[in-house]
View 1 (tube, rainbow, N blue to C red):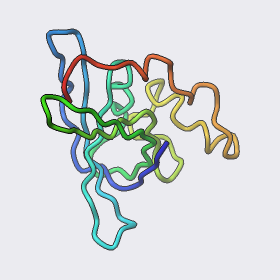
View 2 (view 1 turned 60 degrees about the horizontal axis):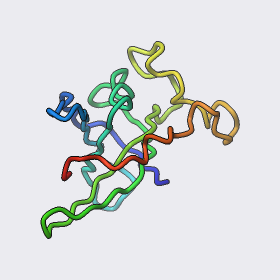
View 3 (view 1 turned 90 degrees about the vertical axis):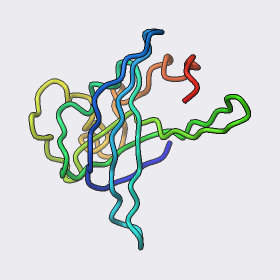
Length: 130
């Protein structure tokens, strides 16, 4: 598990592939580094809804896993986000039920809530090369 914080730079539209696989990507610009970096994260399957209550310019904390794979002698690395929360612990603009389950660790004093845990299907191998 990894964590990055910064400002949302851009949120891309959801992509749906013929196999039924779907993903949505977004970019966060880090601010704590000497040289700020633009990190592109992806949300897959049912996690694509996690970004909906957020907008460009908002400060967030993203929990993610690093996924790597090889396809036709080329190697790919993806930052697979599974939790997004506002950096200031306030509810994201738009709020509502879509943000439920993303504020867990802060609300329980550092202990993640059961709703914060990743589903077993997060570990499935996808049939796309990226």
